[in-house]
Length: 255
Ligand SMILES: Nc1ncnc2c1ncn2[C@@H]1O[C@H](COP(=O)(O)OP(=O)(O)OP(=O)(O)O)[C@@H](O)[C@H]1O
Picture (cartoon, rainbow, N blue to C red):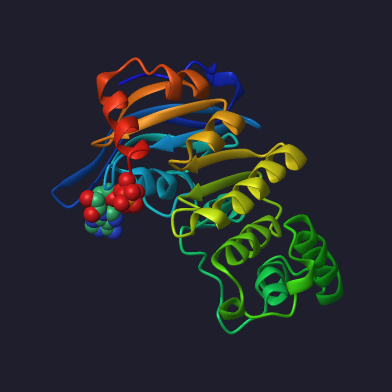
């Protein structure tokens, strides 16, 4: 297991020796990782290695069995329900399969949570929603329903929806893996833009090597619930130190 190089004092996400199992199945086996404020970190690894579980533990959607996780200085495990809700609300989560509300338009998908959870007045929520749609290049599609959108467009709405809650952290779980190749780049471009414009801390589960090299400061390989290798993104993809990483990268390149 490799520990990270970011000094703890500057860490926005601080993960220490985390273990998580589902019944008899150990999924995370001693993960330690620091992510600095404004940093983009890419997580990759084979199917079932625990990537999604780690993301869900970071925002408290799953509890851990051992170790500690803090986000923005708040300990996730010991958070009371209100504090946990705060951590979840300030964390944007973008899923592989978009998870838009099918019976709502693109704009309604974006405004519903600010209105219902944050109490933003409808007119202000709509104004903000339109701005966000513009940011993700979807201003023309405000009144369109998810079924009328392409996968890439749905994902861009999902990103705008996450941003509508003014998150301080964004977690992306394979945001492009359900998309055709030509739609992937449009979504990756939006993620790049969000990072540049908001200087947002991001943890991105992805196997998009070009994206990872151009946006992430660090990349890591998770295997069997452990961090096998962690390195600056370019070095990780171009000159990995571990044979396990080389094998994994060969497999995704040939995929
Ligand atoms: N709620 C759950 N209950 C029981 N087992 C689970 C649960 N969620 C995940 N698992 C198991 O935990 C392991 C890790 O799953 P996880 O989804 O974190 O992997 P992953 O690396 O994200 O995989 P993929 O790339 O296929 O999405 C798998 O063996 C999975 O079956």
